[in-house]
Length: 268
Ligand SMILES: [Zn+2]
Ligand SMILES: [Zn+2]
Image 1 (spheres, rainbow, N blue to C red):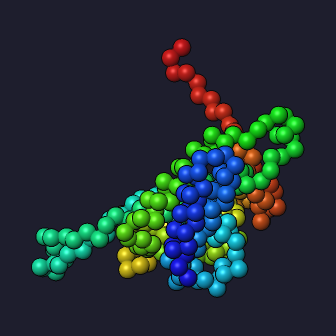
Image 2 (image 1 turned 180 degrees about the vertical axis):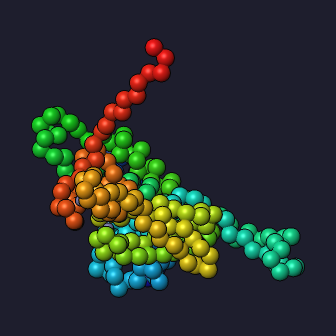
Image 3 (image 1 turned 180 degrees about the horizontal axis):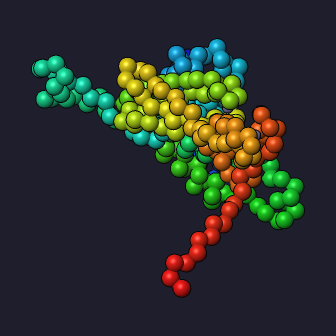
């Protein structure tokens, strides 16, 4: 499955349509660009074959695969340079490093943004827009297409691609059971991870040897009933105005509210 090659083919076709320079060809260019982006998405997914096995997504539409890649790789906007060299002494960096080139990593955030934006060009205008006398803004559409072409060119001409360095880790959310996958990029010690399905959040830190430590971001809070004071663990995201919980012991309801504290002035 040469999705990189497929992506190049679609990009080439898009380029031809763009170079014709006529407005009526723009939608074909947009379609080809979208397919180029879809091929790159599958290509990127294949790079995570151990953490995100192909059997899990082989029937999925690119958009759904994109969403998972966005969860895995929040910080792929950092380009990385890969270099190697001979160490003369163990653990002493080699004097001469040979560079394999700089990888322009596919930034899923950028890709998804462009992908969604192109979608609107591929449908006929909504009735509301037509009624309001709106017309298709071809100038904006061409600008967007040119931007995407330049970006895809950069990604596809990168000499090194699809490295997935960093510590990869996944857990089942302790609150809702959803599988959360994350990669701690090289050079980062800890990252903050939020469950996409519930209020849970975690601090994930690399602890060497491809191990990662997940710490739930929770606070212990007492029931405000002075005769009860049963402590429960509350997710940091739940601590917000109006957030509440039912005490499991006294069955009362506790709510986070705003308060005003007053202190008397010492000098009259
Ligand atoms: Zn969850
Ligand atoms: Zn209570």
